[in-house]
Length: 187
Image (cartoon, rainbow, N blue to C red; front, side):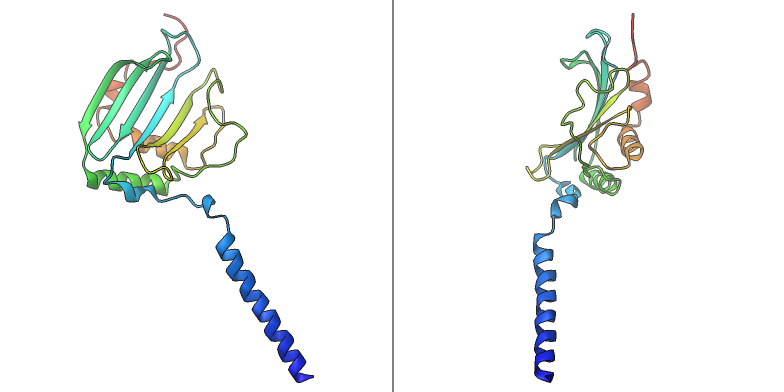
């Protein structure tokens, strides 16, 4: 009887250990965001785009901030085809970029959440659409997440912090964007 109880206990313990091992190997690791900050010394760039209301092509404006290890570019666009109205380029360095990427990562820049929508195009037409991109990185790291001022999104991070982090990378952000009206409805 003692051998039977010992054997049953051993089999139960063995099944428990196997369950934990299998569960650990097959758990969905895609929910955990990949630490893209490790690619700070590569051609990878991160971009934040704020797009204004849906209006006439001549009135439409958007602001894009692209940060890389060597450069911080802020561009003002007119229309839906990307005509550049103004741009500001300032130098960056790999150490500053690395700290910036770590900060973005810690704020959830690459945390996605499920959404039935794959793009913000046409959403929130009287509000703003925001894009959060990783470009020129390894295919496992590249991303295109988005949110709107109408509470639709597929990004799960701390959006106000992420947006502010991008804006404060350019000390002249307020100067270059001073006359940009993202809500313009007529001339």
